[in-house]
Structures are given as structure tokens and as C-alpha cells.
Length: 289
Picture 1 (cartoon, rainbow, N blue to C red):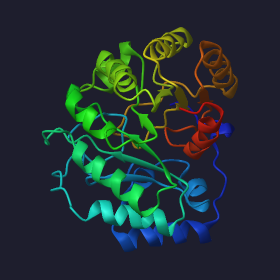
Picture 2 (picture 1 turned 90 degrees about the vertical axis):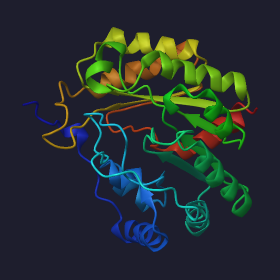
Picture 3 (picture 1 turned 180 degrees about the vertical axis):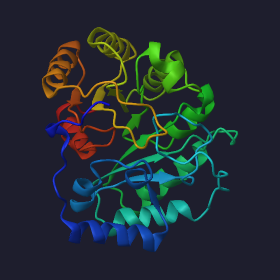
């Protein structure tokens, strides 16, 4: 068993603020990936009033062995009131930047693209100055569905690579590495104004060179923003951690990524896809489109 090191300790959150965010979420009947996926940064993010909203229910149609989101429940019928409730939460929490993600909904013809669009449009209407990031599944390679999402003009299109190609079969058995790269590449073709983003988790048995190779592939697909974080095992039934990667290696990946031309690289043990996502607003000022 690999022992968790000191650098993975999480600071105690400001529970008063955490309670305020949770109260809003419960009042409006909303899910967050922060809670469903057992994110280690939930205390910090909730304490400063941010959250990553999980739309289309908490039940996923895939069973990736690293992820803590439930796949045993039956996916829910889409709720037509969800976009309104989500936009209201953004307003109540005074969010300047919001991240919207979803479980994989392979049971839906468009993978849930239409629900993403409705959520984006409602936020644009209710809080027009809020920037929007969508963290989407691979849509089973349905590029028309991708075009539908982009038609609503999210500011950032995020799709996670998760791991290196060699580990895909074990880690993302229903995913496809080339499909992920294609999704990011097509996003730039369809919406050159959008910032593209992807994330990697490490500690599953990858090598330093394999991570750098994936980074190079992402840049070749014109990916703008990269996040790299430590994989943490949610429970005994999930994949084991093979290594707790030292912070120095994360710092080196950040330097390598910046030299490759990524506009932003966030790389640390506790980094997650949406961690400090609001900092993209600074990026948008530096590199306007």
C-alpha cells in the first residue's frame, strides 16, 4: 500500500461559507461534481463560493474504475427546470465564472448536448457577465452534438484526456484517446473564439515521458489550457494509486507545458479540472479572442 504523503493534506475550510453554498444547492435541488466525485478541494472551493455543477443527474452510463460517480443507478429523465434552477444558483452565489459538467449520458441521442445549451442560454440571460466553462463527455464522437453545444457560445470547452494511451483500456474502457484529441481539435475548427482545455491525472503507473508525450499531442490538437493532478483512490473498489507524485515533478510538467505553448498550465498534486477555473478570466484579458 502506498502511503499518502504530507503534501496531500487539505486545509480546513471555512465551514460557514461551505454551509451557505450547500444550502443554496439543496434549496435548488442541484448536484455538484465536487460532492458526487469526492473532490478533495470541496472545502476550499465551497468556502470561496464556487462549485462545479453536475447536470443531467448523478448517475453515469459508464463505469470508469477511477471515478466515484455512481454508475449503478438508472440515468434520470432530463428535467426541463434544471437550466432555470442552475442559472438561479449562479445568480444567488454571485459567480463571475461557472463550470458546468455532466455524467456520460450515452443513453441520449445527443449525449445531453441540448441540456448543456439550455443551461448556457439561461445563465447568459440571467447573469450575462458570468463567463461559462463546460466540461463535457466525449459524446461518443457525435460531432453534431459538439456543434450544438458550441452554438451556445461557452467561453471554455473542457474535455479531459484523463490518462496516457497505454492505460486507457484499464482506466477508461469506454473512452478513446484519439477521439478525445479529435474532440479538442474539432472544437477549435468549429469555434476558434473558444478556449480549449483538458486535464490529466497521474499516479496510475504512467512515466514522465508518457505524460510529456500526451501534453505534446494536446498542443498539436490546439489545446489552450492544461491541468495535471494526482489521482486519489475514492474507495477500495477503485483503481489503486501506483505512486504519489512529488510536487517537484508537477512543477517541471508546468514548465514543460508552458514551453510547448499552452496559454495556462495548472499542475500540482491537488489540481483538478475545475480547480481555480475562474482564473481563466485573467487569461481572456491577456489573450482576447
